[in-house]
Image (cartoon, rainbow, N blue to C red):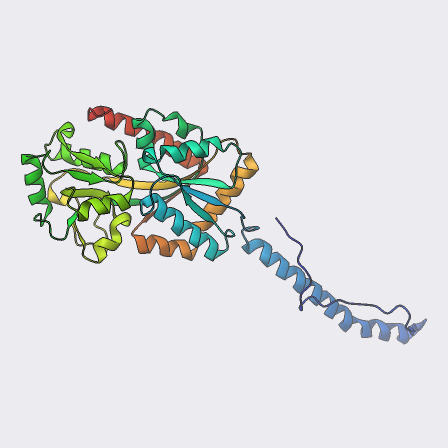
Length: 361
């Protein structure tokens, strides 16, 4: 979209005084001299006009279009969790980079995120509301019998991927994963594990898959769900659970300050800055990562959907967003709307299959 720009100092106006007398020789050298005399003036005018047009052209090519105004991001879990961290980091990066105007982030927790999902589905045609979500919401919708809600939304973008971590409080007797697994195998019910997602969410799935690979029957595991990373942290430091499995980004501050100790990461590679092995390095044949993305309400026009997709696509190319990824140890997993929609449908089928395979459906 090209926008008209008000004349600035570089846009010098050229005004001709039609009342001034003009010497116009009729013939011969006088005509040629007059034409030659006018050439520098014409060149100045032409140069000025081209400079103004060039400036406008550069602006049109480099700008992403008018800043998106009035955007609101709904967080469907309690503050302090991964959805909240993603939403707030994205909002600040959008504002700082000029992709949008001011962005409002607000919460509507409940039922593992399904309450917030239902709110977004009810906002038919609202192109200024989006939902911060991820694999946990896929599991929550499935475990509560409402997977059709996801199919009614408008996928906008997948943003990030991150490893889960197995963590214990700093004063825990479990100094490494091997000791934890030995105690877990001998008494699964006596060593409760906490997670920040409902059954079918990433923390729950990673825990159950890890138990299965370690030779522990998933139904025997005492998994204690919490509504996001904030509640999970409180349970860990108060010894309500023996250990936890959750996203690194949700517990990064406590890991950095030494309140929590990471025993292992669930991804395929070690995480920079974290002194902990992968599960495969410890003999557990499992690789598991979480992801997060953005959904919008149903009923958007192609133009409305395109505007949102353009804004989020612009965000992931900014230096501000690259710094967010670096600071949180998040991997860039961007997918635009159509690809994200196909991925989301595949994830829903995968979660349903894993739950059925583990006897937890």
